[in-house]
Length: 221
Image (cartoon, rainbow, N blue to C red):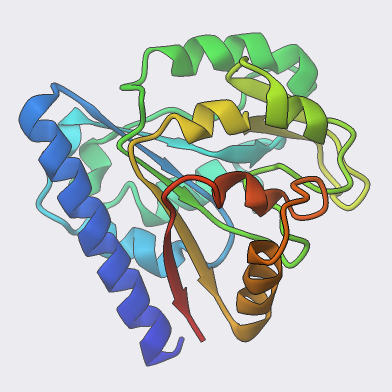
């Protein structure tokens, strides 16, 4: 990994640590919502070592593939192996899957499991794909309109570009966070973001749904 990406991960970890610590001064618990993929791994490892009162921190995911948690495609597995380590192992992690066979069947149980978290989230950390998707808000998903408009917290998602069905927090629920951070790397992602900033059609580049709220952008080449 480049020095720039490692430095970015450490800067982001420090910012998230400070945000959670600040909120824990006035709240009994604080919630961190993270995203999966390869980009956040160094950030997870850096954050896990921070001297936070981790036993008072809830962690969940912005979205998840509807796969077994032992699958290499599981965001929950990624979080357990890279973030819930060292001091951060004391955090309360709530995954976004259930025993149900499909996300459509699983939404009620996951909604119940996540309802008791310390909403509104202290921090939501979003990623972004080359197609402009964030969380599981995909431009080619039939559920995109629903995920962008519903007051419900969670939406089951199926999209032609993705092999597995997914579950995602709705744009509304993610919007309600106190702080929003976009963590991306590479010149290609920077170009997608620049394109997104130059227009307003959320359906073509769903990351635009979060450009209207204060969004801290953490980017490295």
